[in-house]
Length: 112
Image (cartoon, rainbow, N blue to C red; front, side, top):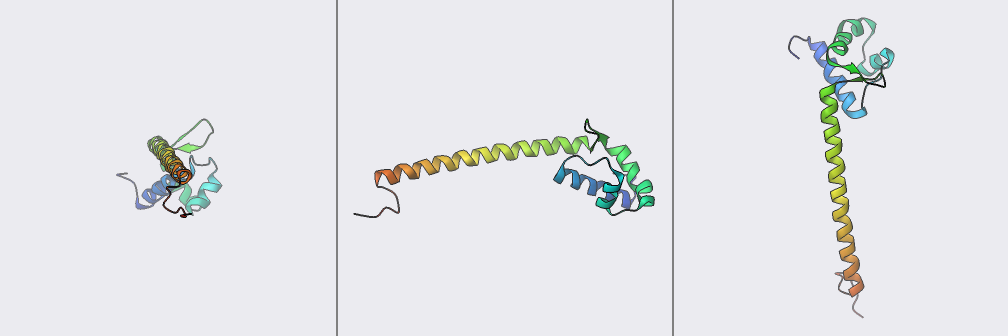
């Protein structure tokens, strides 16, 4: 990011934030201009050099920053693994409580 103007740094980080949240960026200048809040002159002077230098078009013709996409995929994968582990742990706990309840040893069982 050295050598970028303050405006270019801001546009670059905003584009990265948008890509992190929503995935690859649309290949539509009007949409990107609205997302960034820039006019046509700022688009040409500030944003286009950033897109050319830091992003490439993927197979769907959307803009991606390859480094961010690699980190984003890794983060999604870790989140999915954590979700599955939590679900498995929750399922095991649920089964344990079902067994206790069936045996009449549940913490909340009523004495008869």
